[in-house]
Length: 161
Image (cartoon, rainbow, N blue to C red; front, side, top):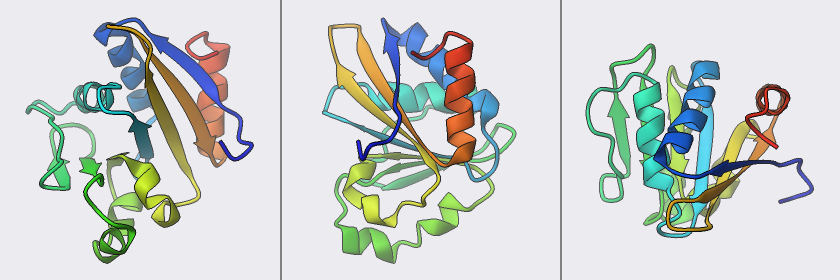
């Protein structure tokens, strides 16, 4: 956790996961970077799908495990969905990911801990844990003032603890 402040969100099902995605999408702007880590089955794909819907993507959002990066249009800005599970750090470095991180859309990176060294200093890290058949624990760790402000606002509003 690197001594960073973290916040918690308990999802008791897909509707709760969608509600969190909607709260984050409402605050998103070009260059928003969300990273997503957790064990297999923790709910990364479900969150990614909810985030896409919340951003106005109408087509099906599915895991880009074999394509690495999927680009979606349809909302106020593009949604870039990445899955870096199968990449080495060197391979990821060659892809030019910073163009997405600094781009005109929202970028969500699954398995981001695998490319930690390549990530910008400013981002919102989400760590998911499977806690029951329908329940998931999200731990949100803001990096940078923008994401700290998001989390503090969501805490004040009772969304995060």
